[in-house]
Each structure stands twice: as C-alpha cells, then as structure tokens.
Length: 64
Image (cartoon, rainbow, N blue to C red; front, side, top):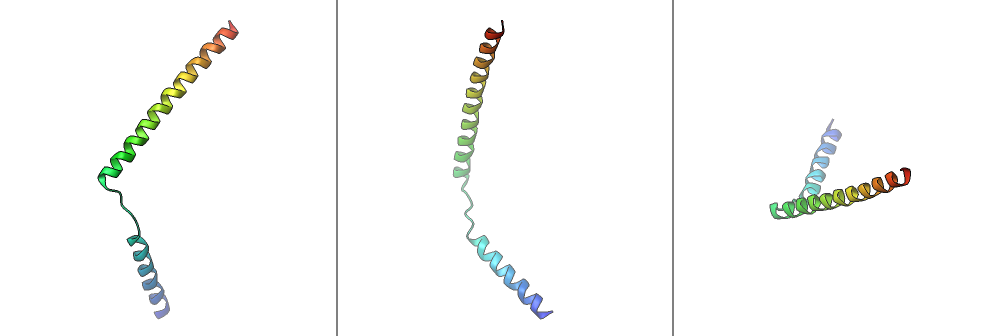
C-alpha cells in the first residue's frame, strides 16, 4: 500500500512540475491570435468563393 501512495505522490509532484512550465497567453496575445485566425479565414473564404465562381462560370460556358 505504501508503494502505491509513494507512486501517487511522485505522480502529483511531476504533474505539478510540468504544469508550472505551461505558458498562458496574455489577453493581448489571445486577441492578436484570434484576429489573425479570423482574418485568414475571411481571406481564404473570399479566395475560395472567387475560384468557385470562376469555375462555375467556366463550366457553364463550356456546357452551353
């Protein structure tokens, strides 16, 4: 029983040590990352929409 208790204590210590290495972003960094993702998603949606529109028109012209 003592072995399991010692292993549990060692696990908690190691987990706490790893958790202390975690970097939590500041609100400013989080906002910047969010804006970058939203901007990139908007640009990609616009690009794909234009490519789809052009491909649709091309296929319609070839089929008519």
